[in-house]
Length: 81
Length: 153
Image (cartoon, rainbow over the protein chains, first blue to last red):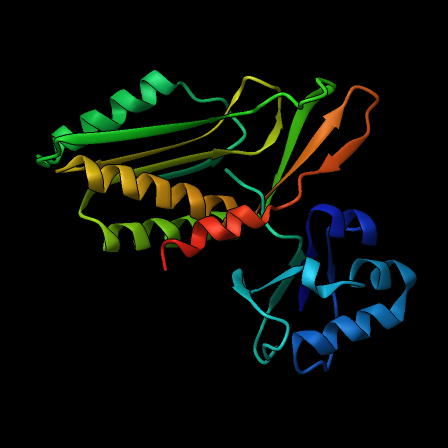
């Protein structure tokens, strides 16, 4: 699946997008898998309450299943307007 | 209904006129048009040179579409316009615009406020304040933004 990062999450991890092969069942598992990979991920995902997640471009939550999901995006709370 | 996510500037007068002309063209019986314009503020300390706005292409349009659909279902609206810019903007520049048309003004005002509240916290935009020295700071979401949404529950 494609994993996208925005704003300070993108800066902390150091890339906007990557392709990941994973068996993670839900978002929380994917976060754990990524955090175990590298300190940059661990730093970006240190506080999940400061993050939002979108699955296939719909806002979702960290307990949501990744079954059939093609695009996951992580970002801080939005500040539009 | 028109949604535009763009880096280009837009002309407030032209957009307002076009919005009104479209309503007249469809023969809608609208007596009230509300327009709101968001402008990039300078920082309190005065050292902000630009606001950089990042967005999530694809999801942004989709999120705004959902927000406007909800507004249309909730109020009796003849038309809605949302323009939101991204990229590098300087203080004083227009960042976004919302327009609503309704038969009566209360619908037009309330729907415009609803759209504004939801655009702030549910459309995937992130702002970064850039200083003179080239350093930047991400604007943090405020609790009051979430509180603003709660009033529409």
